[in-house]
Length: 431
Image (cartoon, rainbow, N blue to C red; front, side, top):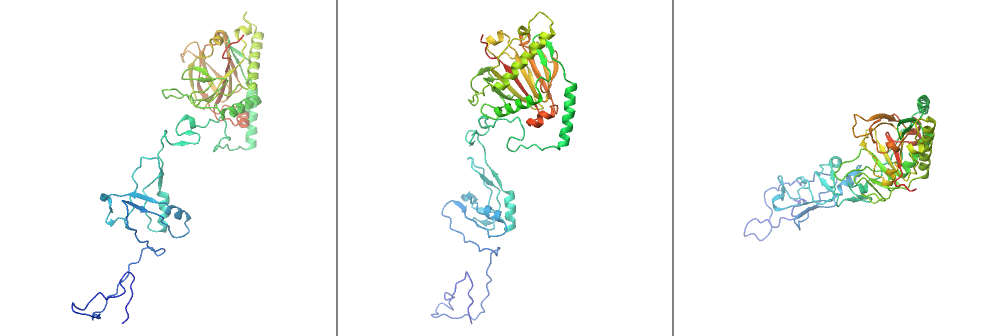
């Protein structure tokens, strides 16, 4: 009778004896039993033998799934997962350590900022690996003191990118183009509105003049593009705040000198990042000089009172500018512009304000009382000048009117919804 060789069983039955005094092998009279080998569950790949544990750590390394139509599965399966074990956790359920039937326990939280894989369950088949990919959660704790990027520490203003006042220029920001006939129709309507609403200059109070629609549409586009170019560079737009943690509801950029809202003073560098503010462009200086001349001409033609126009609104050469961008929800409380040099304040050199984009509701008065303050609308292209007796008036912005900007300006300059405001001053008077 032929012997059947079974994998995993001894090839010979020599060790079995008929009796204690037998000296030669004998064949038992009983019919041998057939032993059925236990095959692995997966028929695609053999079961890898377990390696002895040489350390208190159980390592599952280089787990390679069979080649199949799931290339992503192969990538996930090659991840090396390790889990420290101790004597109290050497068993999982009813299985033993390293048993193929026992699930891998989820990792415990780590104190270091390393990438962790949580709740990774071993697949029962190739298809279940796909579910494992979807359920895998990778987490990385961020610590502002240790985790950092190339531009600076995570969570700090040092790593924040400058704010872009225009759309379609920053990464991930796209503006859908509207049909040409719709754009042309809205432009014609807006041009008709501007021509019908064109108003002459107004003397709101002594030393305060409003030049309606003074800046032409092309000039507005030029100013917006210039501010955008400066705003995304060094010393550009950022959200100012205070040491207590409060933030202003606007984005700010300074030209010529930096103004710090916390200390309410001017300086050559920005305190929180050491950036130097951009210099005052000559193009903006030209617009300011033209606006002051236009206000003098208006006051001279008006001819009321004995005050000379240059006395009511002194001539000034701007060397600093604060550029603010208000979103549609932006506001600014009543305040005074009195942080310039004493020589400038004594001469009552005027502040010249440009409005671009959406319309603002502007408040002004002799004290910080909103209920007593006068209210006007500053539209895109308006220039407001206050100096002389009105140099230290309280003023602020109570709200922004959404979708009120000229379409020609927003389309050509791609300005974000909101209001761009430039306020020019002369920091120090030099005769």
